[in-house]
Length: 438
Image (cartoon, rainbow, N blue to C red):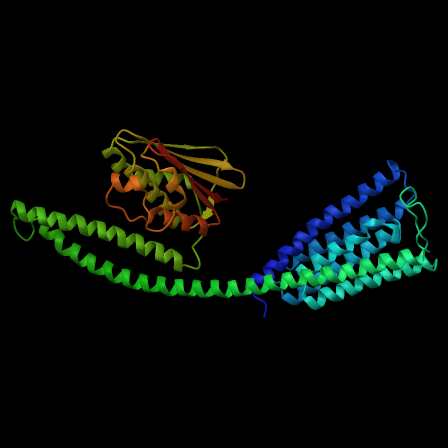
């Protein structure tokens, strides 16, 4: 049974073969042009141009065919397309070889490249059948030219004497050609078979790991949700006590209750972050809608303005023209932008500056959040998006922190097929970049 990933891989390789064929068609065209006008070879240019054009035409047909079945591919259909492409390529090469010297043409050994490609795309049995088809085409071409059924186009100036009637030459070249063809197929299919088997084993292992990760995430979600409920109950008890509703507290009692309030609030913040990243891991679909990124940025700035003002930090917003609504999960994006701004404010010293910008970058929108904060040590940048990881200087500047903020942001961005990265210099500041497709 063929997996979706294997089918997807085969389709990708067929598109790669189509791209190669465009190059081949153009190369044949210009080679014939050079051979006739520069090197003065006497070749049937019209026939060779016709073969090159045919190559381009059926390549276009295969391209349109693959596009038309996108989303409803089956292994049987795609495999037939792959076999058809290889067979037509072998036939086209045989025709081109015939019109450009036949047995004398050194490009004869280009059949080997097709055998390697066939071994990568097809099964072992199909690859050997294609090799046999290539041998059959070669034998028919050589035989028909030998018995003068087909005209022989000698490569004069390249070959001194015609070789189409030289039986010793034909036998020697045929033996080398045919044996090389089958050896190439055997070696390529052996290597390809081992790689496919290894890929299958790794794919199965990856599926098992994904399933284990899902089970772990579901367990964490249930446990964390239970902890959150208990913490909410504790906070509900502490609030009336700290507010003096249950009676006046002395200084020592008030201090102890306030410590408990602060600790509970920090623990609740951590639990909420853990719940958030676990829900993102388990979510299969997101509610996508069109909305204004400008409005989301301004809302995030407004939500964090009190924290920024408390530290006399100026937050500026700029936007390039031509940025319209974006289709994304609004709630996730809004929460991510707010959390990232809170992070920037937390690690930016008083009287610092934060610049938030939207940039138009063709097919994507770039969100920039640049601050004049403490920065990140260069050697710690590769680990900055890991779950629960906090930079060493961040731990000194702020004792409390979950280490989940950036990993949550990364997951949200990647769920939108976007990209996130950080540029930072310790002691000078950090710029966080997010690219989202329009």
